[in-house]
Length: 199
Image (cartoon, rainbow, N blue to C red; front, side, top):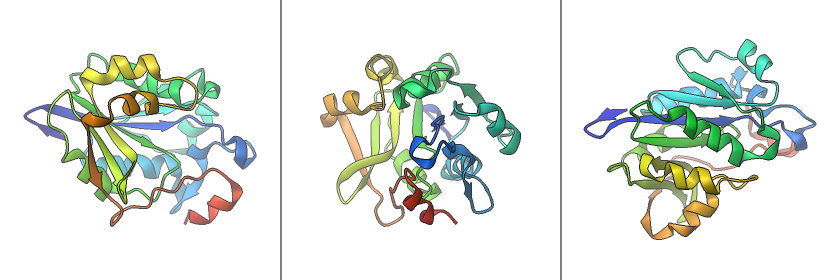
């Protein structure tokens, strides 16, 4: 999405190893006849993001081989096993120097969040100081838009599986919430039982 503020990148975190799924990387789960990572990239594009950066980790070679990620910037996180925080750091670092003004961060294991929710969150972007998040019945969730001025602080606090959680909690008053419950479902694909959400 390009406007007077510059492009907004989609940043897809897709590095997890699926520990609770018997070690099956979530990026390679099948949804609507294709790898979940491929579906998630299309959601970001349909919502208006461009460029799209994808962070891979577990079985990255297999993901590259099976998923069509044409036109994406694909980066690998060698420390993916440390948790989402390391993938967020790698992803934000890959956007440095690209002229991108904000990154809309999405998670590969949330296929109930489609392009309409992405587009809605993008409408909250104002400038490089923007922090915008989807809300579900008023509760903050994903996707989250992070203005570029916040990236250094987010990277510094992103550890373990917390991602941007600590930073966002500390800057709660600055976050614009955009209600998305009517257009998206924020479930995660974490366990065998959750696989029923996939089509």
